[in-house]
Image (tube, rainbow, N blue to C red; front, side, top):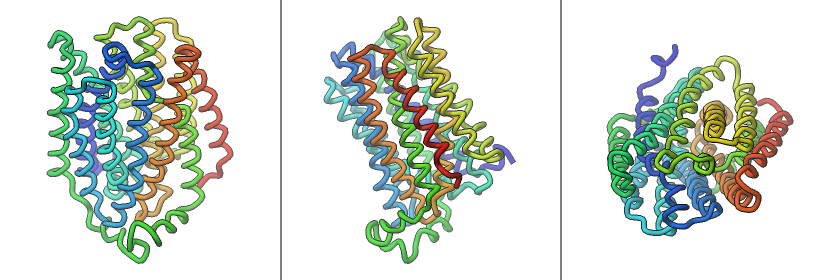
Length: 394
């Protein structure tokens, strides 16, 4: 059991996520301060760009997930999504305005949206049910290694290239291309998964299929409601970067905020998933919500860089406790033949919540100051916790 028992295809998908996230987060770690300081964007504009970009990724998952169910082929759309994201990386060093940044982020996140649901369903089909939490946790941990390697690389390159931002952004093209190569060569789609998706309910993306999603069960819909409420309390990590910069962290060092957050995230995601396989999912999810409330409280009241970084560590821990776990819970609750659609609908609901949360955070920041969005996060996450208590166990 343990890591050695997890199939090679899951490891390969994790490495794909690692290298693509290295590329994406190298860019993302520098983008918020660049937008505010170099392009004159407001915090509300940052919230809009980040919220709209992430929402685009999550909303587009519903379509790619349903199509992957209909085709019975997860890998095809996964390759398409990663390929599009890799192709858009050169747009970032070419950006000359906030509008250009928005367009680049939008296209990059469309690629993320296309790949998300088919990839998540593919992990569930490759991994044995008894190792599902561990498999999703491992993929999330490897994904998050890339998420802190990217900002760390950004800090090193900014120092090496004398803060030549555009040259640093060009470096992000290489790991994205490597991710696509690993996916094409290293991942095989299991034949039983393709066979399982065909049948009377899979004649097209509409009709019988659209009615079938309604029959996934109360456990799935209850999870969807709780996860949406949780996402309303969790806005873009761009606000963590801005909070640290406002507390006195130098511009050249701000990518370290994402390094710290993702170290905590990567270290906790696999153990949290494995623990949920043994002890159950709900208790681990409750712990993640409580940690998010603690993170928001620390970030709201922080008076210096050290306190902000402590809050960032807690934020990363809550991500590790919840993100892979929620994916495993979707896989548990949804029938295999509707796995792509279930992950897609889950992404759609999450996307609407992420956009609303990031816009609200930007408005609260501009209107009432940096602590305001974090105190709001405490309150909204508390409501999500209360909702979870009210949802019957599946």
